[in-house]
Structures are given as C-alpha cells and as structure tokens.
Image (cartoon, rainbow, N blue to C red; front, side, top):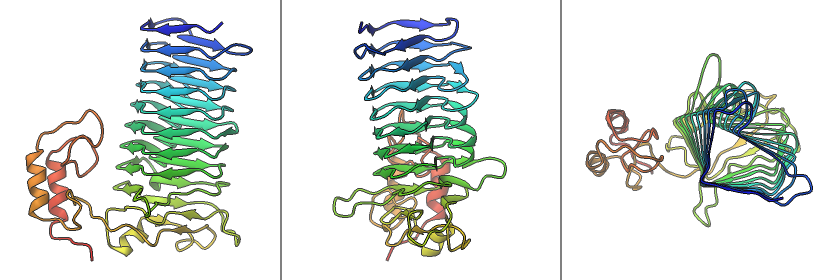
Length: 350
C-alpha cells in the first residue's frame, strides 16, 4: 500500500504520531499535516522502503530518545520540501530530524527551529548515511548539550549543503555544525553565523572532528558562490583532526566571507596546525573581502550603511535575511545592529 495523508491533524497519541514500515511497498506521501505533542514518541518514524515524500507539514513538540521530529531509518531517496520542524526534544540524537543509515535523501526549503538533543539539535546524520543533499533550509535556534547545535554528522558521507542558513544555534561544542567520522562533505553558498557555545566549548561555528576527511568549505569565485562564516563564539572553524602529511585531514576554506579584511582576525578565528602542530590545516587564504555591517557591499562602513539600517529600523523577519539592516544575523533590525555598525564605522577593505 502507498497511503496519501493530507491535511490531517495528528496529536497527543501514545508513542509515535505516524509510523511507516515501507519494506516491499511504494513510497508514501504526507502533506500539509499537523503532527504534534507526542510526549513519548516521534512525530514521524519512517523505516525501510524509499521514495517517501513529506511536503508542507508542521511537526512540533514531540519527545523521543532520538529523531523526535522525524526519524529516518534504513530508508533512501526520500524528499522533504517546505516542512516546519519545531520545538521537538530528543534525549540523544537529532531533536528535529535524524537520519540513520539512510542514503540519497533531499531536504529543500525546510525550517528547523527550536529543537534540542544531546547531539545534532536541529539535524543529525549517523550510521553510514551517504549522499544526502540539503538545499535552502533554515536551521536556527536549535540546541545540543554536547555537539552540533544546528547540524551534527557522525559516520555520514558525501553530504552536500547548499544555500543553508545556520544561525543562532547553541551547543556545548560546535554551535553551528559538527563533522565527525565523515568524509567528502561540502558546504557551499551558506551562512553559518551567530552560533554560540556553553561551558568549556571552543567553537561556535564549525568543528571538524576526528576522522573527518575531505571537508570543503571553499567558495567558487568563478560563479561567485561563497560561504559566510562569521560572528560565532570562539572559533569560526576548528580542525581537531590529526595532522597527516598527505593532507587528507586538511580543510579547504578558501574564498570564504569572514566579514573582515583583517588577516590576523581571520587567523584568530581558526584553530589548526598553526595553533597546535599535531592538528591538521585549515586553508583560508585567499578570502573574500567583506566587512561586518557593510550592508551595501561596497567594502566600507559609512553613512550609506547607516541610512539602510535606519530605514529598516524595527524590521522583524519571519526568516533570517528578511531584514536588510540585520547586521548581527538575529533576524531583526534594532539597537544591537546599530551598535555593531558603529563599532565598525569607518572601516574599509583595501
């Protein structure tokens, strides 16, 4: 059977809201459903099969051991488009979405916010999950007590992130993204900004942990596609991998926007071989000239930026990037943005 569930309200059930065992069955469709308030079970649990489609659903306030919002287990080639996954809590992995041994899934235009877990507050990939593709998702305000406030990966391979907005997430370590035991993962055209750490954490931005190889954060100057990595607590990028002469553990972070033209400031935000010769390298030069609070992209901060900010004063965006004067990537234009602008007043790139 291949059920089609649309415009359903599924809430406050014992254990899971929807459970799919797709073995020997076609893919199912779940569209525009409200799935919420399962205190001892996942919102959606999909196991086996392939080609399942989740579109426009709101999945909220579910609690589980892992994958509290959506749990994918040994299921491939699924599609998630335009879903809102919010306020779900996992005691272990993947508060919002959890992929276990699931390959070639596509996530596009989803909003993943306010979820929490031990690791991977927003999204967690684990169990030899391979070839997953994410495009244009918003991952904000998620929390992990250990690592990967926004996104965590362990034993996940050939994962591609394009056009993601990963901001204001919090973790004990790696508020933005944590790569561990992964290989050949790529981040392109994305924002990793204003993520924070708690306790003794070191890296608000991106942590490349042990046994993570072939991680690319590099921009594409020919097509003007760049990552923006900025305003995170502690390190913007930390490479905790062991140094290898063959370079397999190094990270390519060339052609990145760091929102500064000060090479020492960029270096201070990166932890690698320069800081500890037992660690692998992060290659960050050349970088893209850009300044914090440079709202019009002319490589200086002056009266034109002030005009843009004041003209946008009081804007509150439904998504990050909605407010032209939002200098600090918190989704609105207010006194904190004005303070950031004035703090960089008069700066210019060469």
